Amino acid sequence: MKAYLTRRYWLSASHRLHSEKLTEEQNRATYGKCNNPYGHGHNYAVEVTVGGQIDPASGMVCDLGELDCVVTREVLERFDHQNLNCLPEFREAVPTSENLCKAIYQILQPRFRAAHLEKVRLEETSMNSFEYSGGEEIDR
Image 1 (cartoon, one colour):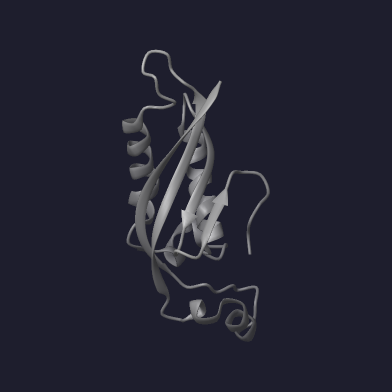
Image 2: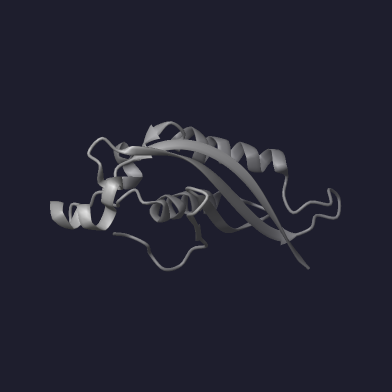
């Protein structure tokens, strides 16, 4: 029997949506006000879902303390209060929320022992959320 645990975290970061593969006009048409040369920021909610067998001794899918430690060290300390455009993860990829979600998934995926990372969900605004569970590449 497989069970799932989803834990929510928060981070704030800024970014400018701009692709070197597009002209200035195409960037403005594609990203609108998000192409502002000075960037803009978001308060993101990050949901990490892990799945696995329920440990008979603890009664849990994974140790919450260990999960919090991994997410804090690998995600929050890396992205919180940063300009995403300046980070190595976005040297070649536009720091869209889709690509941020993918980057977080790829960072966390090898970090779990007992549980398996099922997906990462990133809420950018009350209107926009993104999920990534591995597989097909998302790059612009």
